[in-house]
Length: 470
Image 1 (cartoon, one colour):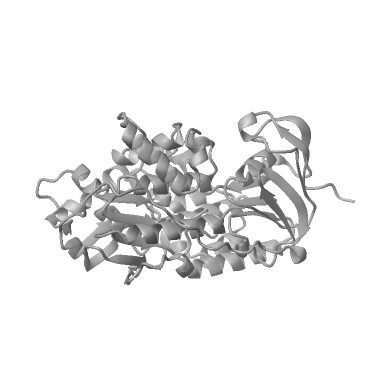
Image 2 (cartoon, rainbow, N blue to C red):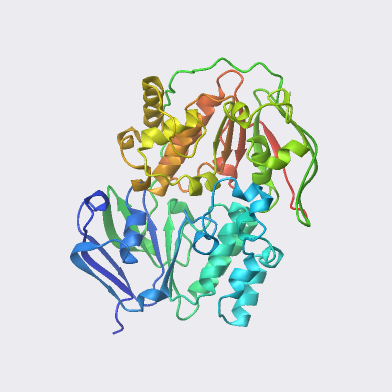
């Protein structure tokens, strides 16, 4: 009988902060494809890091039936290929002078030795060819996911572990990726482990499921016998008290003929759009259509805004206002921000940094600001993690902290770019309820981006659809 591909027996982690509630067991046999699921904070990422040998054991054993180097991992929180590109910083994507020497997609993929047929098939299936001449740091979140997946598949891994493969992808790309994974699952010599926050996303080709709960690794269950947990009802939400009077302006955003180009690429072409105070908009469009670029103009992160006809909160851009005067009215969260905000500070202080619009906490918050930050953590269901380091939280818990940070200063405009990415079903319901409750306050405006129609909060009343240029 062939050896097991991966075996973890009675695994006990050396670091107490990451330890499971009981010794962990995991086994992958030849031919199996496994889903690892469970609520946020249940230990999914810790289990994967243990299987990869990144977490030291003080008890039990970990064995491989394949060389450890043939097990590859695509993590949700990966930055713009930081291993090859050097340090990546938030807003770098919008500063063209810092992008001139950045490696391009084709250069990095071309370094990998691979079968030409497989390369062509992957390029066609995930529409990689239009991205080949694009600097990696200019990729949208969805384009980055495609690049990561193709890059790992070209390394000819024998076991590919993918953390939430479908987040950040538009509907068409999700369908293509699902088909690609199905076909890969049928290939000899490749086995898949998918880490999924939503049990509804488990594909049909998965043969077995491990569910984690309360920091315990459950039994290995055949896919046919696995039953997803029912989606809970939205919780009752009580928000911390409002801190600001509504901003007195009739228009939150007005764009006239906005055109953004990077080299020979046109991202936005003569865009006209007006958002009035108190309106709630869904911003939609396929990967690479310019949604993140548009948001960067509104949030004062993109220096090209100064050359455009843009009015924010009733004031023309470039008339002497500072970016901090703009940002104090905006609460913002995105996957790009999540990748950049990896700071070793307590969660409550990460939330409090929202008062200062800083990546870390470089100013001393008042007692009242810390109390408000703690109250927002309670609202998002993670008050018990206030004193824990942001880096010690799961990616789903980190996302909740960053959401609390977006709300903490009671902003006039919320910009939520795929805010539910990586959240389990219960937390998705909670966050949608919080958004609806907050947006019921007078004068609050919302721009909400999601590739899942079911993720939209009920307060959304308008829609702006962008199309990909070229």
